[in-house]
Length: 482
Image (tube, rainbow, N blue to C red):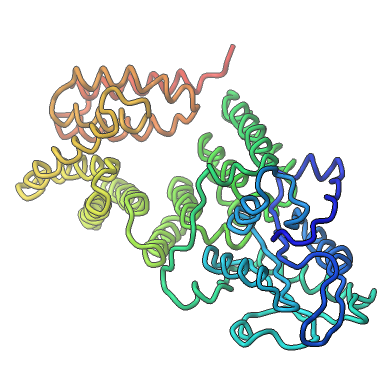
C-alpha cells in the first residue's frame, strides 16, 4: 500500500544484522492520520503502529515490516505484494474499511492458509464479509491508543503470534477452510529475492552450514551444526528457509536425533509443511528407535491424505517398508514377504504418479528382482525401459547430479552392463565428496548388494565388486583429514 509515505525508520544495528535470520511480520494498514467514514473520528495509525502493533511483533521475536518503510528497493508495489505472499505473518488493520487493506488481505487469504491476524478499532463492527474472521478488537480514545489500550493490543497480538508459532497449524484463511487441498501460492526465487536482507543472510548461513558439514570426523560436523543452531536462538521464530537448511544439514551428517529434535522446536506451520514431515519420516526411519517406524508411516500417510500422492512421499514410504522387509527377513519373520509387497506397491505407485521421477522406479525394479517370480519379472521387464527413459531425460550417464548417476549405476547392474555402471560410479563419487553426504553412497551400495545376491551370491560377482568400491569410497569420505 502506497498512501502517505513518511520517512523510513532506520533499523538498529542488531536488527540489521539479524533481520535475515528471523521470520517477518508484514503490517497491512493505513498510514498517517485518516478519518473514519462512519464515526468521523480522525485516527492516528502511526501511533497505533508504534505503540501497539510493532512492539507486539518484536515481543514475539519477529521482524516487523510496514509497507511504507520497506527498504528492499525497486517498485513499492512489487515489494508489498512479495511481502504479502512470503511473510510468515501478516497483521491487517481493517479499521475504516480501507479498500487497499482489504484488497491486500484478500491477496493474503488467497495465497496462505495460516498466520494472518486481522485487527480493528471498536468504532464499529467490521464489514459483514469478514465478520466471521477471528479479528482482534482494540479501543481508541480521541483516535489514539491510551497506554492501557496499547498494552492490551500489544498483548493480544503477541499471544496470537505465539500460539501460531508454538501450537498446531490452524488455517485462518476462509478459502483454505472452505476448499480441501486449495493450492495457495508458491513463490519462486525470482520473487523472494526481492529482499536483499534474506538473500545475503541466506547465502552466509548456507556457507556456514557447508563448512560445518565438511568437517571430519562426523562428531565434529555435528558439533559445528549444534553451534550454528544455538546462534539462531529460538528456532520457532527463525526464518523458515534457514531452519529447513539446518534440518537438511543434520541429515547430511546422519544426525537423525538432531533432525527429530529440531522438528519439535519448529513453528507450528513449518511442522505442518509436507516437505518437513517427509524429512521427519526419513529421520525416524533411519533412527530406528521403538515406535519410529510406525510414526514415519503415519506421517507419510498423513501427507498423502493432505497433499495427495507424490513420488517423494511414496518413495519414502517404500523405503520404510523395504527396511521392514529386510529386518523381518533376517529374523525369519513370516511378515517379510508382506513388507516386500508393500514396498514394491509404494515404489511402483510413486513412479506411476510421476513417471519422470526415476527414484521410486529404480527401487521398484530392484525389489521386483528380489521377489523374482514370473509375475515380478514380467513387471520388471515392463518398468525397466520406462525408468531408463526417465533417467535419460535427466542426463543419463552424463548427468551432473548424484541420484541420476546412481540410478544409471543400478540400471547398468540390472542389465548386466557393468561398463556403464563403472563409468557412472566414477562420475558419481566426486559429487558426493562435494556434498559430504555419505549416506547417499550407502543407499546405493545397499541396493547393489541386493542385486548382487540375486545374481548369484554377494562374493565374487562384478556387482559385488562394485559394491565393494562403494565401501572404499565411503571409508575414504568418512576418514578424518590429516
